[in-house]
Amino acid sequence: MNRETYAVIGCNGQLGSELKELSANLPIDFKFYDYPEIDITKKDELLEILRKDAPGAIINCAAYTAVDKAETEKDAALAVNGIGVKNLADVAKAIDAWLIHVSTDYVFDGTACRPYAETDATNPQSVYGATKLQGEVYATSYSKGIVIRTAWLYSTYGNNFVKTMLRLGNERESLNVVFDQVGTPTYARDLAKAILAAAEKATATNDTTLAGIYHYSNEGVCSWYDFTREIFDIERIACKLSPIETKDYPTPAKRPHFSVFNKKKIKATFGIEIPHWKHSLIECLNKLNSK
Ligand SMILES: NC(=O)c1ccc[n+]([C@@H]2O[C@H](COP(=O)([O-])OP(=O)(O)OC[C@H]3O[C@@H](n4cnc5c(N)ncnc54)[C@H](OP(=O)(O)O)[C@@H]3O)[C@@H](O)[C@H]2O)c1
Image 1 (cartoon, rainbow, N blue to C red):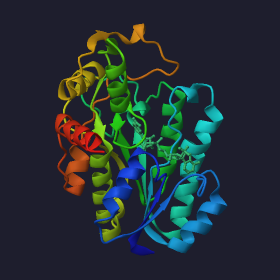
Image 2 (image 1 turned 60 degrees about the vertical axis):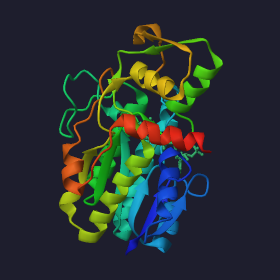
Image 3 (image 1 turned 45 degrees about the vertical axis):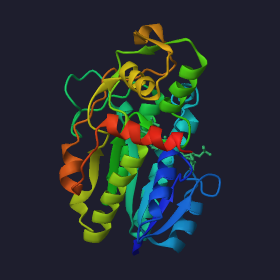
């Protein structure tokens, strides 16, 4: 096991791309993989590739993330989000690597009225959420498995809410956005930094009490409507924005109404500071504007 080698799986997605960018400045030997070069549903291939790298940590950013499509593609979602994570946990065990896996607020039903702690009961309301929960079970059954749940992820990479709102805001004269789903936007770059802090401590100490579930989002709370309002204000987008209820914007998969996280555990365990979502949004928009 090479403590200074990390294998990142799903490196071309939002989060994986942020890790790739951050890796340039670190004294770590990163190995980056994505589908189809690596397919986490195929355990033998995974083992063959990762055994050669012998990483100290496997960081899994790969997932089936099409939340609505998953409602009609349960097997495909489960293959990646469930079995794929089992394969990664088995391979990590075989090569004695830490597994750092990313999960979601969709494992909760969103009926809480105070920020979710890691110990709160899960109750997924969608196929995507159920498959991600299955993945959590596999990752946490491994003694060196760390699961970081996150929510409302956006980045300068990939497709996400921020980019969609920028496009729609510039194309349309008016837009309706739900105001009864409340959570915290998470800049994938900030999450990537937190993941690296976790990987560093886990590989340096090899302390298995670090294994388990953690919550990470940016600080603060807002609705999707507030988030859009902020994007439009910063970018001076004139599009008329109106708040609507979820019932007036039906989607195949049910979303949690409340997905605010309590982040005390990840801050205390890995000694990280978390930026407020508004500050990170400005950073991301500045970066998008400079591209
Ligand atoms: N996006 C959000 O709002 C959000 C919220 C909460 C949690 N999360 C979680 O955060 C993590 C990162 O999300 P993200 O937004 O960065 O995801 P993303 O942009 O959709 O990237 C996922 C990556 O995984 C790859 N992949 C899919 N199936 C694979 C397989 N069988 N083997 C190997 N790679 C495979 C995808 O490749 P292809 O493009 O070729 O399929 C893609 O490059 C995921 O675990 C997700 O569930 C996301």
